Image 1 (tube, rainbow, N blue to C red):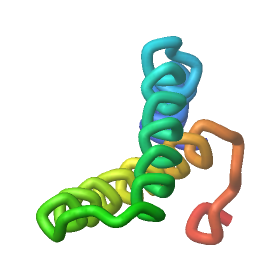
Image 2: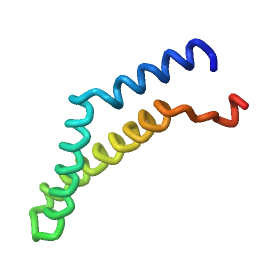
Image 3: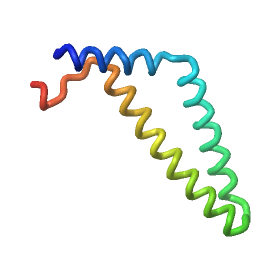
Length: 81
């Protein structure tokens, strides 16, 4: 593995194992569940618009969290083979 790749992998490992990051992930999961529950009730259109905006934010956060998780593991990508 290249030194820069090893450095980045180490940084991703530290981030993944960080208690604040783990707590934030759990908080986002709870907020996401509450948003799903809120969508089952009749709510004003302005609240629906806010929920849609938050839903995009949650999705993007989970995408980033998956990237951190994958990049912190010793995975050989096709470009490195």
